[in-house]
Amino acid sequence: MCNLTPSKVGIALGYRDPQGWVTEGWWDLTPKACETLLKGALAARFYYVFAVDYTRGGEWSGRSLMCTKDSEFTIRGVEDCLARGYDRNGFFEVDTGEQKSWTIQLTDPSQPGAPQP
Image 1 (cartoon, rainbow, N blue to C red):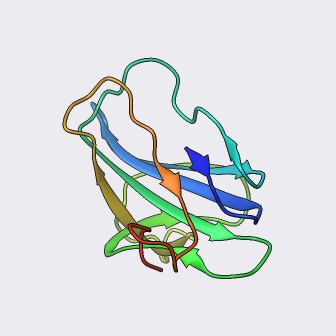
Image 2: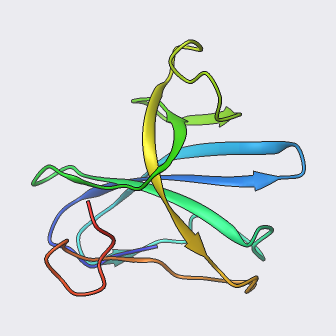
């Protein structure tokens, strides 16, 4: 994941593993920095991302609803988030095309090709 913005951002990631859906967070990325979130070869084709701009406010989100919480988390399942005491946020889908590695670049929403908030 690369943060190409001038802001500090927080990243949450969702994906499906052999036991089902899981969401994990938060990774904090400083401005203009890249970090490997998942070590080794990718195990899924589709990954889901929710990111928060800590500096200027706003977020990168989508339509896939998954569970999060304010502090560091690993959450199994995407159902009944609120009833289980979690927050629910919309994640955007990333199709890796079954590649073994993939880099997502977060850019300012005003930049062409940026995931829309």
